Image (cartoon, rainbow, N blue to C red):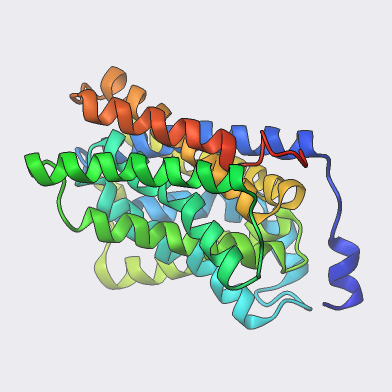
Length: 301
């Protein structure tokens, strides 16, 4: 890593990391609900992607204008992992899957898989050594996903593609998490570059496949602008970056396991989705697993 990259690195407090992680999961739960809701509107995945990345690309224009499309000192491999892992590819996979998956199940399959994927990458690629408490927390997350899987196989309520696309997207996000940690970029810088690249990709897709923004009611667009653009695309991206910088990639990713609990409650209350014993049990188990997998009860904490 060069001098510029090292200069960008900071050492934020653990408290900042926990705040960033908490803000992220609160926003992500609302993002899953808003994305699930958009399935009943004329908006397609490309339309939502334009909103998701267009808003932060505009707001953070001074940042990416200074850095350029290819920030100096950031290897192309890391940049590609960051753009794919939290940008256009990640977004298209998750949005397509969430449109066909109840909010509670989507929250478990996506949010529950992220900590496990991040931990496995940390262990096998970067030789991290989680303690017993973190492994138990990750095991609880796996158990929660397993409960949901067994429920789905017995009721056929979730399309099989969701069990491929959402964990696959979680692996992409985990890759982004570790790549960002090693990029030397700040949370705002990374968010700006990812937003610009992803917006340009979605703009290209819109030119090829068209867009439904013109025929969508203004109130539906406003909802997505707030949820996708302002909250998920801008605020959550920066907040998650703060958590990664303060806690490390594996521990920050563990916060995403709280998402299933919030998405389950929101799906039942706001979208009228049926919540059964399997969904509640899976959400609670994965939510509890995050407390241990973040190292909250670790002897070193």
